[in-house]
Length: 98
Image (cartoon, rainbow, N blue to C red; front, side, top):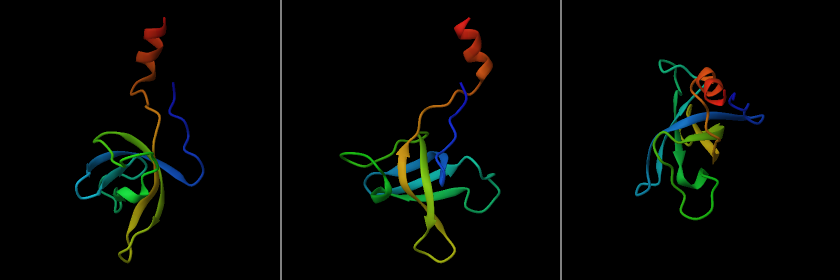
């Protein structure tokens, strides 16, 4: 099963870390290589779209929008939602179904 395409204006990534006590963390963007600027993107708890206590777990797949950050020249994640899981290897999934 292939990963679904993100909605227009949204990206996929995975949570690097998130501190519920501090109310922020970082997301690693799927589409940006590690050596490139803005590979890790800031995420504030107020940008998480979920009911109840807003927090994220490490390695959780998320989708999000990119918005200008509070500091000049930076960006941050907005409207962060939990994304559907992806399969690392389509062939393994195909073999399981046979």
